[in-house]
Image (cartoon, rainbow, N blue to C red; front, top):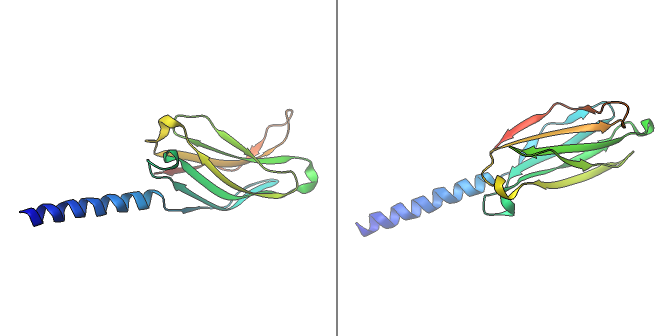
Length: 136
């Protein structure tokens, strides 16, 4: 009986550890692009609930692909129930992004969205890529 209990506890710990490892696994984001801007080599991971705030973690390269238009680029990400977080690029350059999106109350969040845009100023509306949805 004691061996059976020990085996059951060991199995539960092993399965629980697999879930934590899976939660932190990196997944690819397809290229996001629009006129004048691109987000490439993108990856994301859901941090385990007890680590790094259980956040949605985003990495990739944000590029201004139309250097002569005078417009900047930015990426946006948000988690379920919260506003968009904006991460600015640099006009005429490619910048690496490595951002963590979270809120203390969002550790149980299971949905996140990502998009990137070209900032066309206050007169013209920004043009953005499609918005991608990811789940934990």
